[in-house]
Length: 305
Image (cartoon, rainbow, N blue to C red; front, side):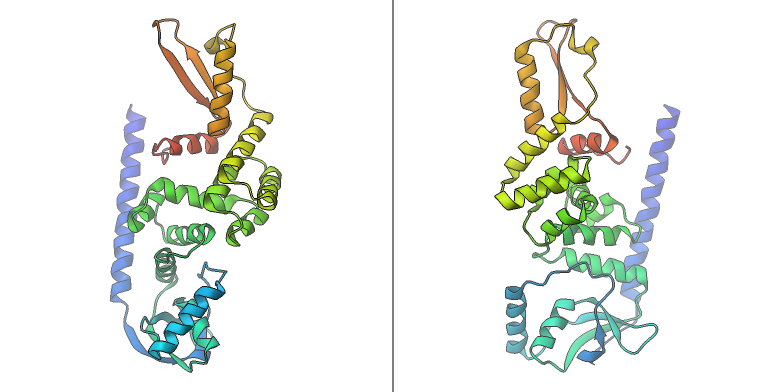
């Protein structure tokens, strides 16, 4: 009991510290000296914290048309001076800069500030998340940027108005093999299609299933079924026979198989010996990551794992 109380006290203290850091960071950003002016387009350089790697031609064309219609960028770029050469690093607004280059703009309206690396990280991540056209991988990278400033998953979730499990599940995409991440980045796999692959332990298996899913245009439901079967074939802990009883009813076995196919996880279904008509069901996790995934699907906070 004492250890649990100490752990909770430590986590509460850490959250207070993180909140203090985040509040201080926001205040520091607001207090940075800023200057608005037109900046020659050739002096602007892409930002190192930009997570967006794909710029869709249709959307870029629409942005170029908007710039031509107004004759200027109404929303200023956020930039900071380069440390070791002439010019400025773009923190927010790289798409506008690229579109302006295409249509021959000479200058762009910019907000220039002496932002440090932590402030640039936060601004870039927050700006990207506000975009509606981010692919799931870019969204995950934006969350990672914000966490690099010291924020927890919960604080990122609170900041953007999403659940912590939403943030956590997107971050899991970053652990997928490069080939699978490329499919997500190119939008050949959606978030719903890529997410089941995260529960597989083998990168080779993840890549194999992803390639087949893209080639055969599988739905997310089909991928979930294939992943569940792959997990059933792998080495997994056997249910405790003392819990299951010496003889397992064939109908219970069929139920266990159906649950595994639907969820991707093995389970134990137990008829109580103490209470008439009572049953118990429990999932079997082969790793901490798998346990976390099971709990998150139930909406359980897993930060203590």
